Image (cartoon, rainbow over all chains, first blue to last red; front, side, top):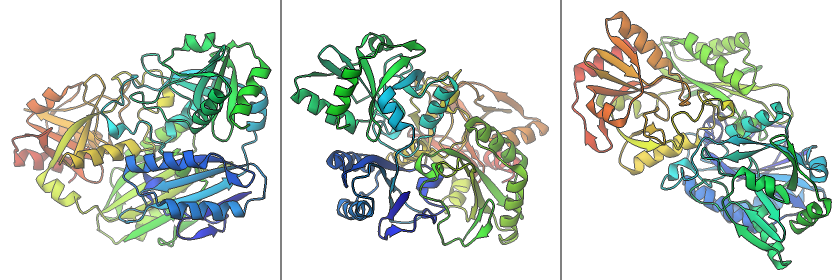
Length: 277
Length: 277
């Protein structure tokens, strides 16, 4: 099942094409998106997604008309079966070549089949270089660090490389060996009562709404939360390593670069529950 | 005027959308493309474009069905006014989420208005870092070096940065200061009777069909052709610097990072003519 809404049109027939062949989102990957979790008839932590797409749109110089988008999102969710968990996406592109108006599309679909077993059993991850130095994005706004663009070809190719290596997902490293993020999630790890993630900034990584929410809740429960640089050995030494994404939630890494990790299922469930899963 | 053909359908109404909202080319920039020059009722140097999209598709693990594509291209060109110069694009994506078939779209449109004055008067360029070391793509196939993907958000952002700086186009440099390529063209420069460009390989740049054709013709006319690394000072010292793209052809750089360059119009015309412009 899939639902599709188009900005300026509302809900449309989900079986027909809605994107023009000259849309710059299609021809150039020139646009941004958000992936959201729909649960209990609402978008989880919608305020964080709205804030982030505002920043992405501003970095690209594309208008995000918040009231029109919220109306469209509400209309699409109203058509989704109440209570069913869904994967929602918001796509905002520069629009058709020569057009003044951006393109906006909202979709909801069922969760990928892999997510439920990955939430329960964890994932195997490999580290791959992202090709950029840890400070490559300083004073280089055109590299679109921290912008959630739809130009994800490298992210997808990295996940295919992981599959070739018998793994489920990737942790990107900078060219100088610093931990960055996963192709579609952020990296979080715990050591004792401390919960860690990588700070955003000149490394170009995306601010994670799931990590933000998780750390806020964890701090309320007495965890020490830490933003810190890390190398792969720091992950090997952690009690647990998570890939934290919006729809899949935090899933724990049970094997990193072929090295099996010990697994404390209670700790995994505690972290997932803190994030709302 | 625009024409649109869809693989498996042929020519379609150019005013209606043809891409589904869940096409991975749209949602993830997961696909590749070619930009071609249509002139005198045919695709210029089509064999080079076919060879290149075969390589892009293979790197992405997407099928390029050459006979079906050539039939579609022929059908679309037949509808284009004979003799008119046109900008043709071939888009090949991984297809819809969960689908087994890739998506193929062919478009022809008129040339961007800026191209004719840029061919005549040249362009002002600025250098910008691409963020990657010169050898970043060695043994890292997932970074898609040399693959003409549709994930061009950074290329487009770089051209907007050029405009903000009062320039027309960009020459990308590696993080360690080596000349790479332009966002939608390659860099060629002449010194006396030698014509130079950057070799492809671990630097991740795209092989340029325009440069290949130009160098082949130039060699026939007695030029010495050279593949060599370069830094910006090598461009400042050159007799002429060109950005060589398929539809715009070679256009000469009249100003680089704010430094005006001398301009030998006869030399510019000679190089453009060698490339078929």
